[in-house]
Structure formats: structure tokens, C-alpha cells
Amino acid sequence: MTASDTVVLGAWLATAVCVAMVLRPRGRARHPMASGAAAPRTGASRRATLPIRPSRRAATLDQVVPDLLDLLVVTLQAGLPPAAALAAVAPHVHPAARAAIDDVGRRVERGDRFVDALDALVDHLGTRVLGLVSAVAAAERWGLPLAPTVDRIADDARLHRRRLAEAEARRLPVRLAVPLVCCTLPSFVCIAIGPLLVGALSSLRSV
Image 1: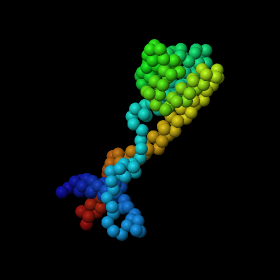
Image 2 (image 1 turned 180 degrees about the vertical axis):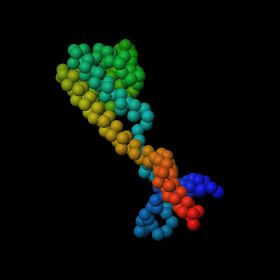
Image 3 (image 1 turned 120 degrees about the vertical axis):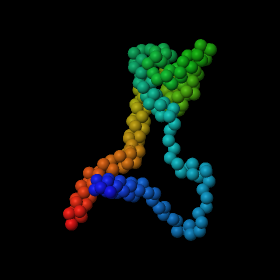
Image 4 (image 1 turned 45 degrees about the vertical axis):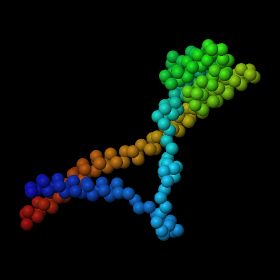
């Protein structure tokens, strides 16, 4: 075996050892009362301990609803009534929100009141638009100004979207840990340990 083959083999062995040390599972602390065999955990208990993450559709709707509310604020401030404002923003929103608005229009065409037809928004977009539906109902019943209320609801929706983005950003380093270890550590070992091995082998051969 040549000196270069020995250096490469030593570098990969050192890399494997470092990766194993980083990725090895940590032992669980046992409860003082758990001297006997631990009781098997049921599937429900295991699922209960897993972190609850939103589905792909829920994550999409969390991004879509603030844009819909912002556009509604603009159209309402321009003087359009709620029904016309909702129809005006339909071509400019995400397809998921557009489908909800189209469902509202179909219910109105069937003879439902606009306020009652807004339940279609809740059916498609979930509880994210409950504040909007309640604001429109209050504006129609009591004559309250709608644009300022929708503006506050849009601010809350944008704040919620920002918090979700920050939480996703905090999870990113955890996701990148394994790729960074597997991709960066071998090159570090070759650069840092390789020259030392070469020097050691050269000194041994010169003896």
C-alpha cells in the first residue's frame, strides 16, 4: 500500500468515526421508579408525543389568506361594496382563494344572501377567514365601517404568517446538520488530518 493510499484510508476512517460520534443516539435517562421492564407504548401515545406540523395545504393557506385580505382592504378603501370588492380581487389571488370566491359567487347566484354565502370562504379557507366573515356580517347589520376592521384582520394575518416563517427558519439548522456533517467533515479531515498523516508516514519511512 502506497503512502497516498494510506492517507486516503486514514482520512476516511477518521471521517467515519467522527460521523458515528455525531449521529449516535443519546441514551435516555431512566426514571427512578422504572427499575423493571418498561411498559410498551401504544401507537396513540407515540403519536401524541410527535410534534404537530401543519399539512401542505394548511401551510399554503397560511400564506394565501394575508394577501387576500390586503387586496380586500385596497378595494374596500376604493369605495367598492363587499360583494364587488371580493369579485374584483378574485383574478389576482391564489387559485385556492379564487376557488373559495367562485363558490361564494355561485351561492349568491342560487339566491343566498351575500353574508350567508360567505360561509363558503370558511369551508375552503378554514378559520383563517372567520374574522372577515364576522366583520362583513357586522358591517351589514350595524352599518359599521368595514375597511378599518379588515385592515386590522390583515395585520394579524401577516403577523401570523411572519411567525410561521420564523419558526420554519429556526428548524432549518436542524435539517442541515446531517448534510453539513456528511459533506463538510470529509473535506475537513482530508485538509487537516491528511497533511499530518503524510508527515508521519514520511518520517517513518525516513527512519
